[in-house]
Image 1 (cartoon, helix red, strand yellow):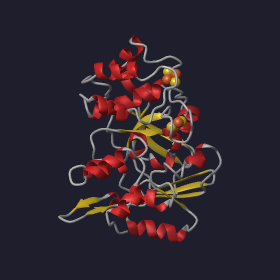
Image 2: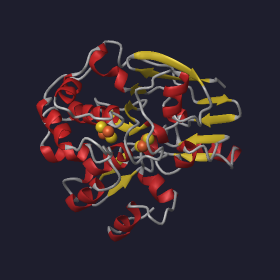
Image 3: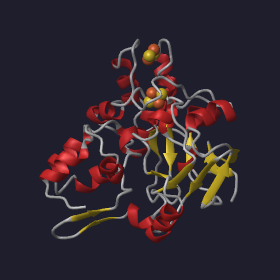
Amino acid sequence: MQSATNFILNGEATSVEARPDTTVLDMLRTKLDRKGTKEGCAEGDCGACTILFKRHGATTAHPEPANACIMTLAQVEGGEITTVEGVGNGVMSDLQARMAENGSSQCGYCTPGIVMALSGLLMRTPEPQEDEIHDALAGNLCRCTGYKPIVDAAKAAVGEQLYGTAKRGAALPFSASASVDGSTVIRPHTVDELLAAKAEHPEAVLLAGGTDLAVPLAGYEAEWREIITTGTVAELRALHATATEYEIGAAVTWEELMHAVADDYPSFATLIRRFGSTQIRSMGTVGGNVGTASPIGDGPPSMIALGSTI
Ligand code: FES
Ligand code: FES
């Protein structure tokens, strides 16, 4: 079993030796000295810690915004992380320059997260409508500037190339397990492997997106000795539509489901759009939302109303 976690950081192959239950925010700031990514709430609400993330094996072209404070090293093996230090290729990106010019930043604490959330939007949607800009900022709190100049800067930056390096997309080794200082992660590829791992490690945390489960970790109120990831299981990442129903793998994210059902169930898609923020929806999963059995879980009421079965 290996001890390092391997991923691409801002275009460079990177290897970190740290417990798999270390948050990505802690890893960036304390292990890699990338202090541009900020900590505000440490529970997925404020967006100060926003990074862009492309998971191992992702089929989408672009990375998605995610909250580094509630994401763990267990989840990033073989993936690609971009921090605020990685936009603009060493000079300010067009978005950053426009935000600096028009006073989009005062204390600046929220600014890196806002840059990353908007960079994610502009990469997905080069000419976003105003409501898409507002949606992209739904997970980012700014208490002192106000959003108008920020939205104006995003509008002005429409169509700009935000970043890109030739090194991105490099093939990385993918380790199915890692163990450091008493914390172990197992990353199964099939449901059978997952069930076998769970039988062998009955106390292991089943980690999907971690948007709920990882909040105590971010507050240093918990540690995980054993972790089994669900996002590495191909069957659980599958989303099939038939003539009569959708079959949704437990590790499908809410952002993926929102786009998939937009034509057939527009009101369900509208409801999902209100679910957390882009950062939360791009990591949080349908199975995780059911599995955590939270009394304030957003998914189950509408899924019950739609006649879903598990
Ligand atoms: Fe607030 Fe991560 S620090 S969302
Ligand atoms: Fe101060 Fe946004 S510029 S919180």
